[in-house]
Amino acid sequence: MERFAAVAEQIAAHPSKLDKIALLAQYFRTLDDADLLAAARFFSGSPFAARDRRTLAVGGRSIVEVARRVWGFDDAELSRAYRDSGDLGAALGALVREPRDAMLFRDRLTPARLDALFGEIAAASGKRSNRRREAVLEEILRAGDAPPVATYVVKIITGDLRVGLREGLVLDAIARAFDADTVAVRRGAMASGDVGAVALASKHGTLSEIRVDYGTPIGFMLATPVTYGEVYKDLGSAVWHFEDKYDGIRAQAHVCGGAARLFSRGLNDVSASYPEVVEALARISDDAILDGEIVAMRDGRVQPFRMLQARLQRKSVETPILQEVPIAYIVFDVLAAGDELLIDEPLAVRRERLAELFAPSEHVLHAAFETQAELAAGDVNARFEAARARGNEGLMLKRADSPYAPGRRGKWWLKLKRELSTLDVVVIAVEWGNGKRSGVLSDYTFAVRDADRLLTIGKAYSGLTDAEIAELTQWFLDHRLPRSRQREKARASEIPVEPRVVLEVAFDVVQESDLHESGFSLRFPRIVRVRDDKPLEEIDTLQRVREIYREMLAREGAGPKASGV
Image (spheres, rainbow, N blue to C red):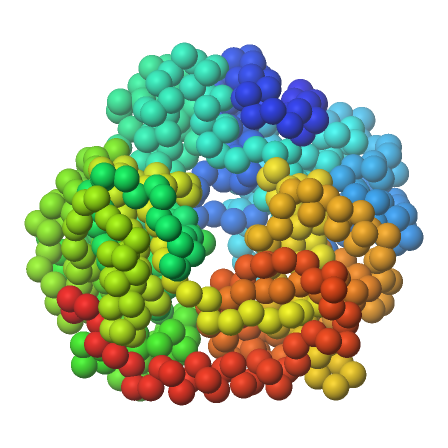
């Protein structure tokens, strides 16, 4: 792992994507099969392959306690180290010293050895599982007793590598390392859900043998937001598909062998929350991976998102809830059929394949769409107003020739919707970002006023430029508050800051929530701008949030009929 850590340090120090790819490719070429399999997965940011349902179940507290036992530091040392880095791996790496009772013989820690030890942790079960997990973790930390190794071992365990890599760059490095076709490598990763297996297949020239792995979610293709009423400059003469944008949650369905599973946009299995959809999908005769939207629906009418909330994140759904909140899965794309991955096929072809897969039922429907070429702004705006009149969020525009590009935004898919409103809020806590933002404080928890209290209502990650984030990072570091001022519901990674930075935040929906102290949360919050002109005393109040919520409920009424369902 010494070489793994050294390469990770080099990658983190190079902002250029091409440099990162070159460094990683060079490292991959030097590894034997077992180390390559593990290292490719680790650099993708996870201890295990995406298709692997195992977890380490090791929290930050356990890591700290075991590390303290091995290296003998105290709380003050840990606090200083964490305050300096904002990262648990870096903080513990700085505290590495010769173990108090150093072992005379230790197995050398390699990626393959670490992978095997992770397997032992994941396999621990029964009454003494915690003790067994901590014993293996102690073995890992004793073997990885060099500061850089300890740093990156902890980062892998916590799934927070922070070297500016994402899976796409790792796949590019695999292709470069073994002179493999980049498209074939990416397709192999999406089909198999295992970057390590793709690295081995690239090395040995067996990419063509990889098949679709049902049950491993594929990254979702994303749409680029477009402002309503603007001149749509990028539409050109292409053929476009129009769909209503439904007010629900995105879900990917894997139908295989008479069974079905549903995955959320976060790639979590949410099948238990929607048993009637799973049952209807299981009746589809052909294996397929589908993309669509889960909505609350009653008597053919799509209901407001707030109606769907009662079904979210439930491990079991009782009959009264099934009757109170009936739902449907509106399918608009197909990613795979049988052993055939369809993501490189144009949307028009995928839509034809989708129409052949199943007949609509009460709980699984085809999304309605229309096509048009050579669009004018008036065409788009008129269709948008029609979608809104049907009670839906807005409009989706998808090019008929678009491939399915997981995890990417571009000009292939556009989404048009109006923000409900904006709020002026104050930042009360910040967190270090991930990926290319791993060195800046880019995640902001914000609050509204209620008399002399500040009550949290959400968190935002997007909307500011890199320059603005860099400038605010320094300000936040200079204006940190003691952790004793941390809120009861705060995450361990949050850093409390002086409440002086005011943001204007846009959002789609206000919803009741017990996740925040205000009793509300904002759906899809986005930072519009920093309000340097507005002091803390003039930010929006909890009363204003309640007013927006009541106005939203009044506009929703009984819920209008959806198009084509």
